[in-house]
Image 1 (spheres, one colour):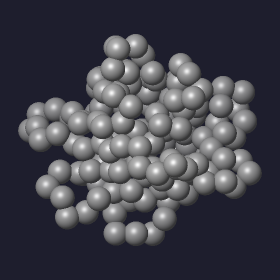
Image 2 (cartoon, helix red, strand yellow; image 1 turned 135 degrees about the vertical axis):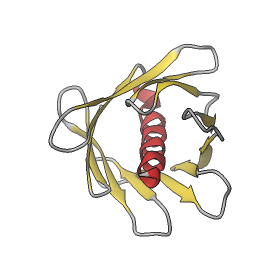
Image 3 (tube, rainbow, N blue to C red; image 1 turned 180 degrees about the horizontal axis):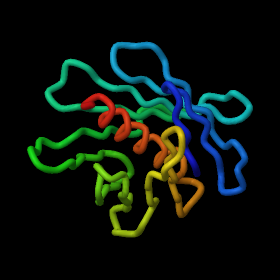
Image 4 (cartoon, helix red, strand yellow; image 1 turned 90 degrees about the vertical axis):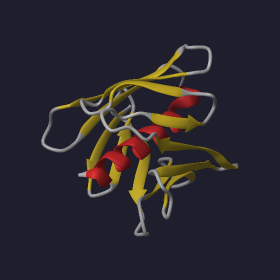
Length: 149
């Protein structure tokens, strides 16, 4: 999947350059992203929680709450506590090169940033059933990084 950002609105493309998801930012106190399929059906939501000590984002799919991601307290590194499908993230968050693993240590997705006129992220998801959840994690990490700048 490829993610192009432009003012909190994103088109997500598959490897054949077809739109797979449309992400629309919603005006709210904090970040809020709604994820739609190409037919306009809402597939998921990522909401930044406010009035919390550390940046926290809740994730919802069509069935309801699926988990959260919270930045861990650290002065020198970027680490996240993820409560979603038993996944964890490892890598260079500042350089936008990291990997998402499942609880068995198997690779779920690789994420990296490419240089273009706008932000351009590649999310290489190994199983299409994980694409929505990987996208939600990437949106939350990007929003948290954006909030710090």
